[in-house]
Amino acid sequence: MKNIDLSQVARDYERDGFAIIRDFLDHTEVEAIKNESLKLVEEKASKDEIKLPFHHQIHGSSQHFLDSANSIEFFYEKAAYDFEANKPTLPTLQSIAKIGHALHKLNPIFNKLTTSQKVCNVFRAIGQLQPTIVQSMVIFKNPQVGGEYTPHQDATFLSAEDPNALVGFWIAVEEATEENGCLSFLPGSHKSELARRWVRSKEKRDDGALLEWTDSPRQYDNSLFVATPVRPGDLIIIHGLVVHRSAMNKSQKRRLSYTFHAYDKARTSYRDDGWCQDNGTGTFLTVSV
Ligand code: FE2
Image (tube, rainbow, N blue to C red; front, top):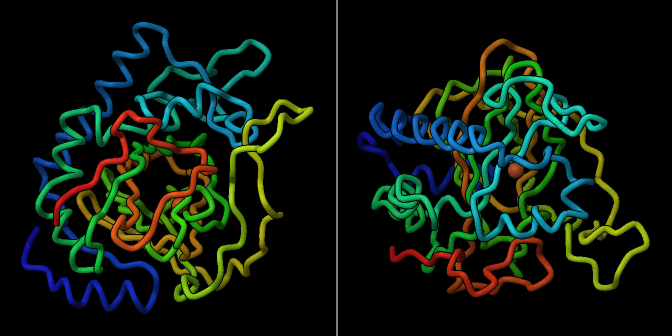
């Protein structure tokens, strides 16, 4: 990371609900997480251990998904999966959607980056006193099949009691452009309330779902979103309440990224109805800043 004015980053974050730090990782660091991501998929694919496509309806009734909070699991793109034949329609590296959700705890390469001094400096700059990382993911966004993420607030999925104390780090491992589905934000929308939450069902449901929505999705004006194209190594920090989206990747270029989320344990607690729980495994990792 070059000389970054972190106080300016903090002001951007406070004003807009997101901030971009260019060249947060250098070329060597980017290559390390890219190579590790590809290696993990290839190893898993060779053992035929990838089980499920990535989709909220499927996740919502999947113990495998809940268990991924404390392990490293692999998920296919819905658009690259044949549900009748129960297998992907493309080679694994072209059909994979994501790896998650305890890379930050269980994988040495991702652990080193996620707990690094430069990450802690950003946490400190935005006022996080006891940042506690709850999940991490590699997102592949493969050409032609990498799915859309509809407008959402991350606090819908990650259950900090106070959603203002939730932050996401999103690091571009490959270039993200408007063509391959870079993130787009509704600036200032972090000042709004949390629209809905995705929570563990209190009672056994007839449809077998283990998770459910507390409300229907809110509608947003797509023309108000601001695209944030970024280069490999750039970091975007994302407030837990800011509304953001990304389009399907209709290009020929993959859009690999590494992302993780943390809440400030000094300011809030974590609700026990969120899908992602520590379950006594230590995957909720508090770092010293
Ligand atoms: Fe998000």
